[in-house]
Length: 311
Image 1 (cartoon, one colour):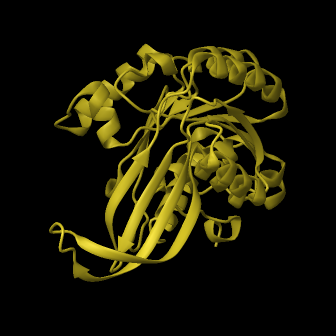
Image 2 (cartoon, helix red, strand yellow; image 1 turned 30 degrees about the vertical axis):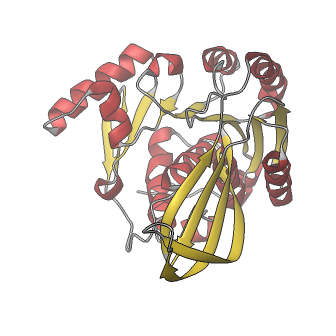
C-alpha cells in the first residue's frame, strides 16, 4: 500500500543537502572520420550543455518534487564554480557556497558522438580544512530551519567533518539520510539511514551468497553503526530496507531502462523529501523506488515531479 501525501505537505518540507557538487558538461558533436594522428574519432562539437551534478543534482531532485531545497557545499573560486552557482540559483535552490581558491571545482566533461559517450574527462582536487570548518559553522546555523538533512558523499573530500555534522543534526532530532562512498562507513555512525547500492555495500561487508547472508551482514552493519535503517538499492532487483523490525523489500518498477545516471540521487532525494514531510522510512521507500523507476527512463541526470510520482 503506497502512502499518499499531499502536494501541500511536500511543499512545506525543507531539505538541506550537504555534499560534493560538480558541473556536468556535455559536448555533443558529429563523428565523420578517424584522426590521422592516432586511431581515435574526430568529434566536431556542435552543441554544449551544462547541468547540475553531484549534490547539486540531489538538491534539484528534492526541488523538482516540490520541496524547499537548500544546498551547502565547498567549491573552488573558478569559472566552473560561478557557472554552477548561477545554474543552481536559477532553479530556486537556496545556495550556500563556501569557496576555496586553492581548489578546482569538480567538472565532469562528457564528449558525446553518434548518441554515445566517447570519453569522460574529470577535473578535481580536494578542499582545504579551514574552508570545511567554515562549512560546519554554516551547517549549524542552517540546521534548525530544515526538516531533513541529506549528505551526498561523492568522495571528493567535501564531507571531512561529517561525524561532527551528524552529531549536531542528531541533537536536534533531524532525520539524517546519507548516500555513502568508500569502504569506511564508521564516519556515518548514528545517521538515520544510509542508501548504498550493491557495489558500494559489497565494498564494506563483502560478497553475499544468499538473501539470508545479506540480511545478517546488513543488520550487523546497521547495528554496529547505530543506524535506524540501511536501504540497499539493487537496480533491477528493486530495493530492500533493513531496520529494527526486520526488512521490507520492493521490486523494481522501471518499464524501460534508458539511463541509470543519477537514479541514486533521485531515490535519496525522494526519501529525504518524504521523510521531511512526515512519512516514515517504510512509508517513503515504495515511493522512492517508483521515482527511481521513472528517472531511469530518461537520458542523463534527470528528476521526477510530484505529478509523475503520483500519476
